[in-house]
Length: 288
Image (cartoon, rainbow, N blue to C red; front, side):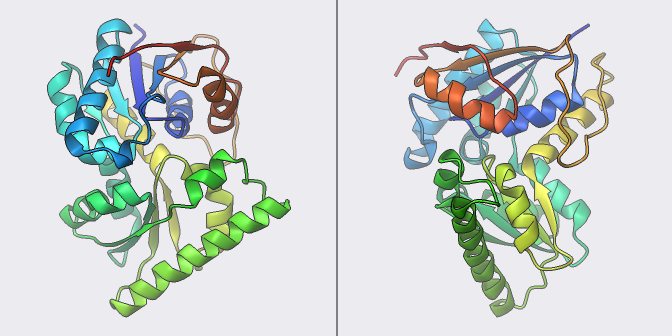
C-alpha cells in the first residue's frame, strides 16, 4: 500500500523538506502545495496565517487524499499548527519540534544557536521548543538569507557567493557574541528556515569548530520516518542519505505540485530547492 504525504509551505523553501522526504519514502506519493499568492506569511496576523494554513491543509487532505501532512513552513508551524490539526483528520507534523529534538540529541552543552527568519524569531517557537527539552537557545533573525537564496547567490566559487559567505559570517559573529555575553557555550546550530539548507556549505565552513549544524529539513524527514515506523504503516522507508548525495527518484514515487500563484516562478525556483526539475506545477485557487 502506498501512502500519500501532503507537504505545505507558503512558498518554495519547503521543497527542501520534500527533497529529504523523498529520500526517506522513495515509493510514497507526494502532493506539494506552495501558497505563493499569499506569501509572506510572516507579515500576516496569527489569525490570518491560521486561516490560510488550514485552507491549504484541507486542500491537500480533501482533494489530494493526503493521509499524512508535513507543514514545511516555519511560520505556519510556529503560529498555526493547532489550527491545522483541528482542520484535518490526519496526523500533522511541523518543522520546529523535529528541529528542537534533533538539537537535543546533538548537543552536549545544552546550549543551542538558531538562525531563522524575523517572523519565526519573533514567535520564539524554537526557544520554547528547546526550553521544553532542557536546552538554552539564542535565536537570530537573518533577513538577508532568504533573498540571497532566491536570487541564486549560492555558489561558493563566485563573486555573489563571496557576498553570501560574508553575510553569513557576520550573522554568526553576532550570534556568538550574544552567546558569550549571556555565558552560553553553544555546540549546536539549528537552521530554522527551509531556505537555509541551500546555504549549508557556507554555514558549515563558517561555524566554529565543534559546532554541529542541524538541518530542519532532514530532522523532519527523520521524524516522519519514526512516526511511520512506530505506527507500522506499510510504506517503505530508507535510511537518510549522506550530505551532498543526489539520488534519482524511484519510478514508483509520484509527485504533484500545486501553487496559488506565480506558477512559472515556482517551476524555475522550485527546481533549485528540490535539486531536480519540478516539472509541471498546477495552479489552484484557495479563495481569499
